[in-house]
Amino acid sequence: MLEWLDMQPIESVIYVSFGSGGTLSAKQTTELACGLESSGQRFIWVVRPPIENDSAATVFKTNHRTDDTPDFLPDGFLTRTRKIGVVVPMWAPQTEILRHPSVGGFVSHCGWNSTLESIVNGVPMIAWPLYAEQGMNAAMLSEDIGVAIRSKSFPAKELVVREEIETMVRTIMDEGDVRRARVKTLKYSAEKALSKAGSSYNSLAQVANDCESAFKYLKAKAQGA
Image 1 (cartoon, rainbow, N blue to C red):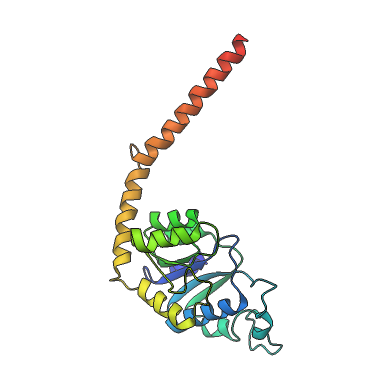
Image 2 (cartoon, helix red, strand yellow):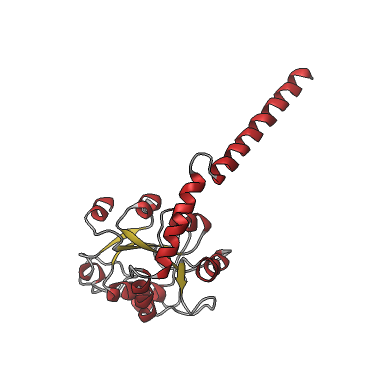
């Protein structure tokens, strides 16, 4: 996978992952696959099987597949996209992928770890929240910070159709998109904060100092008891 990224142009690949617990319905998985394919954009997609009790799951299964594409993806998807995409089952090294220079966009569930990893690496996002605080994060990223776009279907529980997915992918991967410039600015701010004497560096150093002081205090108290 990383070797494949090494062969791609700079910022030409969109990374798609919904975190360690994120799962789409069978119908939504199909729409996402079709949207990615029709966008013509290079992609890495970490795919999890759809929710087993989804009532639409059997609609997309057939006993006559033309290649090794899993039942929950459109028939022939792997064959048609083999030159532009990589489908990864279950898990991928996200940190390494997001920092790779070939990655230029991220379809994300907006979990906080993924959000920070994307910003630190200067990668704009398509916000696709699934549960918990992710909807709030998606709104902040798209409306307040300006580093993401999100579907008009959110926060409603509607299906995001392939045509809208295609449009969002092409938009976020556009070199001139304002969100790309904005996230680059935040990347430099993050690098400064993480550098020695930066705000994040100093905060973590203070935590370490507080822990050390507390340990010394408890040790002295125990010895004097």
